[in-house]
Image (tube, rainbow, N blue to C red; front, side):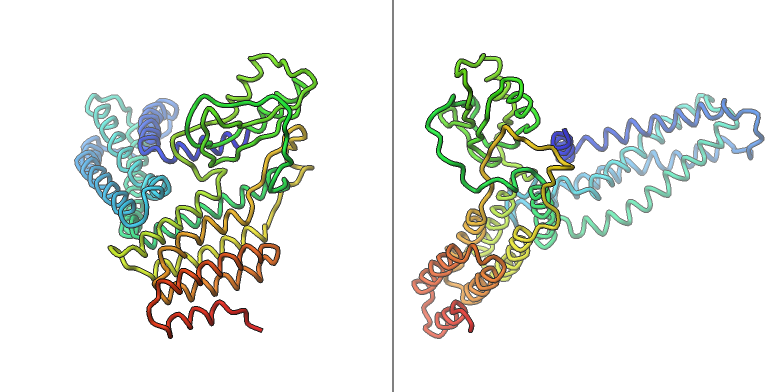
Length: 418
């Protein structure tokens, strides 16, 4: 249930109109509360507030907020376009879900609607003297909120869409995804499941990426039908109707079609990958940004070097979880089994693109070899895979770097230090 709520929250954060709409509803509600408060506290002698002063304040909000909201929307769209061009289109959902920008736009639109509704009611003499006092308090609060939001938003919009901010937000998103994965039951699963040749195969009619799996629903179905479910795919896998997504182990292989349909509905298939339960996608996005930076059109090896450092931090976090799955306090799924993401797959996602596209850059290859040595110390169990990647990078550098001294520097960085 918690995973479903988190998934819904993350999808709503990627919808640009959701928060402004929510703020509009809240603004109308606030104006209505001020109207009702005038009757609730009618007998209390509040300070007299003239209607003209309120009309002036609300008029300033009405005339200014729509202009500022339009400007904010235009600035945000420019920032989003810049992020897609300088980084990668796959980073767009992260940028568009920026809380500060969405809150700013929501505040400006909500303040405009509040002022329009309150001014219309005031012109029609809907507010009592007490109601005008409460309306003044609300209007001043709206003014103060707009000023603070605008100051904070100006600082953010100056950075939003810049490559440095994009890299920071992608790393934060991947960090949250890794921590979420550590706390999931998948963390204690083996990297590879035993091969099963028997059992009922379940496929899915949709074609796309597996975005999430409803583990609670699958466990409930397995308990009701008294079956074991071996999940064959993990979030991020590209699914086709020919691919088996689950293998059912049951005494009675003639399961009702309703049960099969419920199992299929527990797998959400979409046209794009999402970061929530798919840490590998974050590593791929960072690798894409590094590859773009290393292209001849951009020629920015410094960004690739920065991303290599981010990979080392993220892989260190992956190997050293601060909190892991606790079966006593979290839901266990005794009738389910699924493969866990392996460190080898994360290494491939991280470094293959940089190794290929940065082979001609001495500074990138040297930093890459140093990263391999650091990762060997962090995770000795993956030393074989890391050494393989190191040798492949060295071979690419040998064929791409023309100057002998530059290649020898890369070779020295690849040699383990005693």
